Length: 304
Image (cartoon, rainbow, N blue to C red):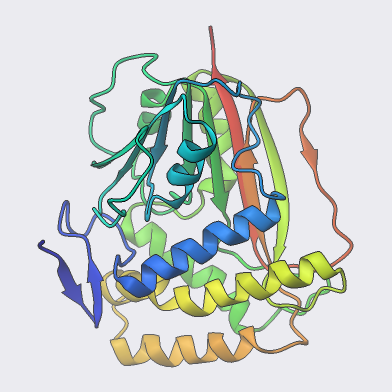
């Protein structure tokens, strides 16, 4: 199988360069840890959308290692599940109601209107150049879960640290790449513009590191920090060297500073994670602790 290699990492060959993330074993392990982080964050739920248990046609865009699609197919044996990705890195031992396809969601869709009862998207930040077109193509029952690349803290402990620099540099790199990393701030408006109704935003704070006092959040932060430690090289190397003209050595020094900060217990960083589902109320879940990253999920349905 053909792959592209750059700066010691392996990348997809299909539409090479259209996605910033590597697809080697290290990246695959990080993706699976990230799936576990989302499971912890959502109390084991695979989705927030109020879809029926007997849902039939399901599409998982940007399936990665296929772990979400496999879990969904296992728990919904009557559903026909398709997982698509640029990289054919999914396992071959899968549920009989699931199959994977190599596909670029930025191409014109081959699926007809109303082909799916549920479309799941998670972590496509920096993957799509034209989100307006994407949402029009995906005008079915859509749940999108995204992560902010700008770490935050409620007590100011990320101010003037490398975490603050990480957010600024990441946004700049995404802009230079031509595929925004700001979609967490733009998704809801773009979905409504495309014709979705009942677009709701759920915002969660996910700690980076085990600094929270709450036992559940401490475990969540521990796994999220592990994901960061495994992921930051893959998240940044291609974008910074290709589009911001950093050298590999400069990136490695930058990442060493990040790894040191990730182990600093005085920094109470969190990510915001966002989910977008069609529910009657918009709500923000408050947490009594500082976290360094935003995650957002949107669950929507098309106008009928």
